[in-house]
Image (cartoon, rainbow, N blue to C red):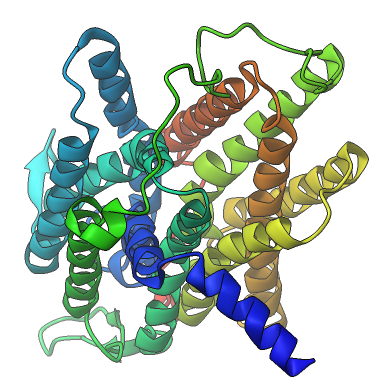
Amino acid sequence: MSDKRTKMLSQRLSNRRLIVDLLALMFGLGAWIGVNGIYVQLPLLVNNSPEGWSLPAHMVMLVQFANLGPILYTMYIKYSAWACDKYITYLLLAAAAFTTFLLAFVYKETSIVFGNEHSTALLSLMFVIAIVGCTSSVLFMPYMRNYREIYIVSYLIGEGLSGFVPSVVALIQGVGGNPECLNTTTLNSSKVEFKPYYPEPRFSCQTFFIFIGTLLFLSYLSFLGLNNLSVSIGERVKHPGSMETLPTDTRAPPSYKTTSGWTMSKQMYSYLLIMMGIVCFLGNGTLPSIQSYSCLPYGNIAYHLTVTLSSMAGPLAMCLGFVIKMPKVSLLTVLTIALLVLSSFICVLAAMSPAPPLQNSWIGEMLVVLSWTLISGLIGFIKLSITTLFRPDPGRGLYYTGVATQVGSLIGAIVTFILVNHAKIFHSYSPCSVLIGH
């Protein structure tokens, strides 16, 4: 029996080139690892940035504006006769690697903009990195169609690892623990003053960004290998002259019932798109913007665990979606309701900052970390499930899914940015304010 299994495994491996699998995986890793790498450093960045706790809201807005990249690329392929996807990908990966290396040395630099101090180096370089991530959605994956279908799975695994790997490294890095209050009262001052001191992590943000930049450079080299190594060229496929209509073809009409056997009622079609919009409104726009307000009152460690574990939960939930039977729409509805309940709980915690319930309690820390991890897992699973339901649609199902994703994310980011920065609904606190009050 073991000989039979060994023979089957040998046949599977002989049918593919592991070096091409590795190249495709590393290529996929470069898609979002830059943006994800910056996000998992937020527990270390917010305490020293001029924006403070509103820094995540600025970052979320920048990622939404970075969708300018896919728009420009779409206009390029529509109006240009010169197809050079390969060279654009080279440019994007090289820019991401160089920008991340540069970020490692200048992320602390600030300047005055409209009378206020801002982390201009961090935010502007993140915008460049975000453009690479957003554009990868319309450029990297379609490029993998030039290779045998088995390598697309390797690419998708790499894309999933682009969120998982930075989280694991950030867990190892740590945040050094919760802040300590140091007495900074001078001899000539009659007022007692305390300032928070944040212990150093195991290694700095600079070291972390250099590591991420190195992985992006390896992703660039992997794409170079995919295009130039003879073993990779041998795994390419030749597309027929008359290709079938792609699911994202914008010229195809909306399809609720097709001759290919795919059927979905108009009401269900709209319902799933609205569900996708709501999930992205929360997952890509609102919740990341207020994460610091909901977590930091419970301490740096709670915030650090929340960011890293929730960054892992999303990719793991999407991997789960590949191996289990696709859930029914009724179950997706139940999961979305659960997501709305948990999201409401997080929004209440953020609004009650700087004094949320169960503060300075391990129960409070556990609840906020667990809630965020479940939210991230639910968002990843629901998004994958809806996309999978639309995948067989030979019409514009996946196109409209993408539109719902971007519209929901953009509205969520804009609304929350206004609430955080202008309505002043959410408030930060100093861990030493209690001592100062006494």
